[in-house]
Amino acid sequence: MRKLGLSNLFVTEIKEALETVASTNGGVFNVEDRLYASAFRFRLLRQHDHVVSQDELRMFKEGRNTLNGSNCEDVEDMIELLEASHLALEGENILDEAKAFSTGNVRERVSGLDGQLLKRAVHALELPMHWRVRWFDIKWQIGLYEQQEDKQSNLLELAKLNFNTVQATHQRDLRDISRWWRDLGLIEHVNFARDRLVESFLCALGLSQGSRFSSLRKSLTKVIILILVIGDIYDLYGSLEELECFTGAITRLATMPPNLYLSCLFSSFSLIGKSNASRWDSEQIQQLPDCMKVCFRALRDVTYDIAYDIGKDEDWHRVLPHLTKAWEDFCRALLNEAKWDNMGYTPSLEEYLNNAWTSSSGPLILSHACYFTGHMKLDDAADLLQRNKDLIYNVSMIIRLCNDLGTSTAERDRGDAPSSVVCYMREANVSEDVARKHIKVLINQAWKRINARCFGNAETPFLRPFINVTVNAARVAHMLYQFGDGFGVQHGDIRQQILSIVIKPLAHD
Image (tube, rainbow, N blue to C red; front, top):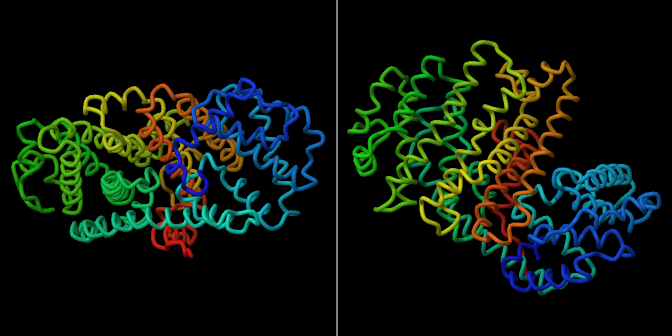
């Protein structure tokens, strides 16, 4: 059900089935079970908030001398063990050993496989299921299921119909946001910046796919595309003095007196128009080039619009300070990086990451997303961010580190500011290959801390939508930078994925 994108249609049935499995023998699996079944049950139970000990997979250690991957059954065992091992928590050494053993085993045997088993092995080695956005994987899973001899035709047809129905909602969202982007006309004023509307929408779609999250997708697409434009202003266009003025203007926006909010929201803004709000920010931005003024006012107007979408007539002015503060933090982090670049300074890895988790845009995106993920009071939504700061931090670290792995070589060749890879290379005096391996270790550690927050939250179901959206942000990062820079030079794999996920429906009987 999960692989075919149908689990939301069978929530009760899946819950009852897993509760039956979990209660069998007190949740302890039979050591005589095939490893495949044990790893499979371990993964599903953990994903659905059941407490499962790593000891349930201890059998792989006892039998690994006979698990050499020489037959199909052993390879299937290894693939499922590899998938289960990515649900590890910190300190679970059995799962660490399971990951190393299964990954090495599958990698050694993959050249001798064919058919569906080869596809499954390559898919798992590229990226485990737990690190994938499930919606982005559905078409692949449906195609694989369609080739099975024991497939159920009615289930296959339902999966295709469900995918096409949900995809139609996403296409409507994309049409709406395309119209907004065209009418905004911002890219005409910042022609040095990346025009990545569809890629931005794909990222927003990755965070949440349900029909009720249409407003979230459209709002986050606006935020992400502005993140790219503003990032290019800091990286490619502005002088240090101009960037300091721009950052100052964002800071003043975040501290704007409440009596000016109404004027900002309901004035008839144009990108180069004036209002009371314009007079408020003019002191900071009057020295800036026109393109930076236009970008600032576009950011301001979009932020007001999103705040009003969240809070409506009564509470929009309570939402706005949280959104503008997130933009201020993001721009300050970008300014720090610009200063390092201007000085030719390479920070230590720790110093870099202390700033980079904010410049990754993770906190900014999730500060907006949290207001759309439930029916909680606005004060509760703000508190939610604070109480889940560790989760947001680790997700943001993955966004940054995946970005660095995908872009660091090209950025170094262009002479851009140092990435985490370069910072570690210089700090530890190691090669790029060694540095990249270290960054991957940090990604694995961050996932373990994320897993600890994800699993075992059955007692707080109201957190689940927020946690799902937040963790999906890390999964989007893996997808986006798996084959390089998904926002930079347009890679064919990214384009094909967008075409498949958003545009092309599945053919069905």
